[in-house]
Amino acid sequence: MAKVYYGEDVKQNVLVGKTVAVIGYGSQGHAHALNLHENGHKVVVGCRPGKSWDAAVNDGLHVTTVSEAAKVADVVMVLLPDEHQPAVYENEIAPYLQSGNALAFAHGFNVHFDQIVPPADVDVFLVAPKGPGHLVRRTFVDGAAVPALFAVYQDVTGEAKEVALSYADGIGSTRAGVLETTFKEETETDLFGEQAVLCGGVTSLVKSGFETLVEAGYQPEVAYFECLHELKLIVDLMYEGGMSYMRYSISDTAQWGDFVSGPRVVADESKAAMKDILAEIQDGTFAKGWINENKNGRPVFNKVNESEKHHQLEEVGEKLRAMMPFIQRKEKVEVK
Ligand code: NDP
Ligand code: MG
Ligand code: MG
Image (cartoon, rainbow, N blue to C red; front, top):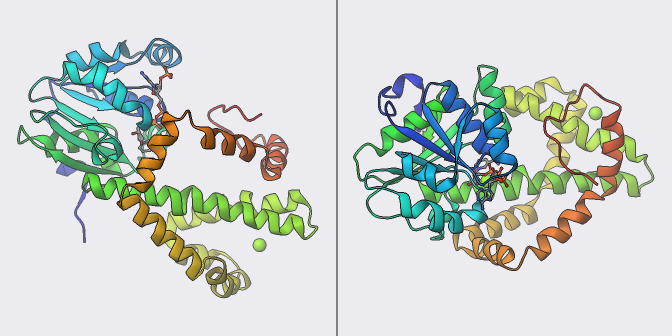
């Protein structure tokens, strides 16, 4: 079994006296910066003027430009959207890195796919929380945590692993458990998980179920509750006790249906598609496509994003959730 690191496995003094620059104050950025700060670490947030800058100032953090933050820091954690990282790194971070500094990421994409090539004289590591940034913050405040992976890509100081573990401890993840990985494994499994299961797999499953019921003449509201709303309740049970606990909680009829029908829905064809998806992640086809999509101004991304917002499932869900004020959307997104 893989070694899982907890608080007691972390050398407490390696970040003492060091300044951590958190570059970007978005989903991951705000969580890392606030958690590290509240754990007593010296944090400087690197932003461009605007929304994020103001938010970080409002939260009581020391905020400066990206280049100034990179200049004063010993550890530079890059928490910008992956597609913007190479340009910002090139112009505003790389020129200010000093020998022996650490350059850090929360996802291996740019380093693994050679979009960022770090200099040979800095440590390079990643600490990737296995959950959305807003939960990294919310669980920390509640005394819990999101688990994380860490990986060392380059160790020039001999301390890179200890610094990475201290960083993971600083954002709270050692409360939940931290696993060692490589940039290659983190990048490929993260991309696969979000595409095949967590985001792509789940949204396609929910949509197909909803459409099947509505096309058969059932009420869209009933289909929404059945295929989307209840999903959280089922996933919560799996999160707490695995598939067995979920199956213990549901009726035997539901469990029998699970056994006989589940493998018909996600069958050999889906597994074959998953294998193709994984192969395209591994050989760089997916990365190349996404990099090009960004270079071209995101024509496909924007088109699909727009049409998905107007799917009947979304319009029905918006109305039903408005009647359930106890379901709180923590952050506002533009829906219409
Ligand atoms: P976000 O999209 O939330 O980051 C937005 C932040 O980046 C904002 O502060 C924004 O500032 C800033 N930003 C964007 N472009 C620039 C620029 N050109 N110059 C300066 N600042 C800029 O990113 P995420 O938190 O989603 O992702 C960060 C990293 O974490 C990625 O590597 C991602 O793969 C990884 N990760 C993300 C997870 C998540 O939960 N989202 C989960 C695990 C890993 P402004 O307000 O000024 O636009
Ligand atoms: Mg990801
Ligand atoms: Mg039922």
